[in-house]
Image 1 (cartoon, helix red, strand yellow):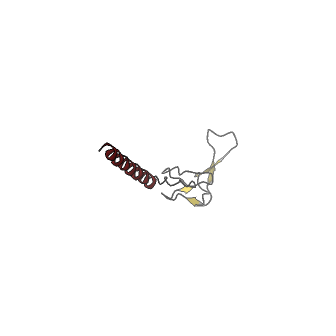
Image 2 (spheres, rainbow, N blue to C red; image 1 turned 90 degrees about the horizontal axis):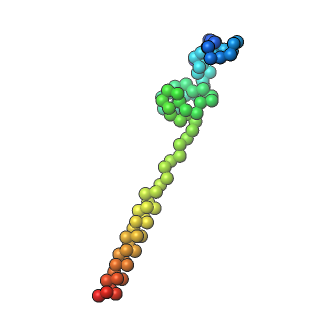
Image 3 (tube, one colour; image 1 turned 90 degrees about the vertical axis):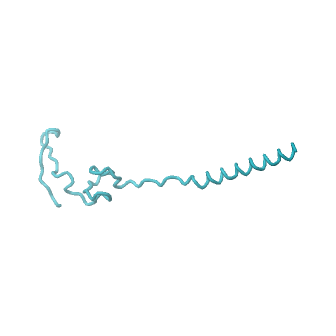
Length: 88
């Protein structure tokens, strides 16, 4: 869509006019729903998706946690074996 008509609204000062439709000059589109985005939008007003913001991937904590749990279990096993040998 190119261009648009100018209209005045009751919320604007006298003599000020806004573009209608609001995204008439949009050159970018929402990556999720395809709605036009204004140049100052960071989030889509239709679906709420991040338009220009890239979200960071969640941290990879499962592997280090599994390694830590393995070390703790092996350490407890060695400790129990040492205690059994000392007592018996």
